Image: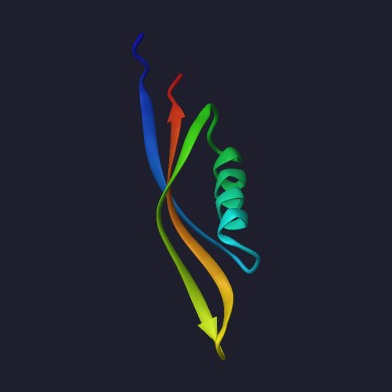
Length: 67
């Protein structure tokens, strides 16, 4: 069975972790998209200040089913 899906790219960040940044991406996407199927983390980076990570950043692709 074939399905039609669409992929959008989201960039987000969190002061806690990459996992939290990923959850924030899903939360944000869920506000305007229905039928989210998956999240693919394409790139991860971190902002560093005085030798400490202060922000975890991700660039993710969100896949959702078209209705």
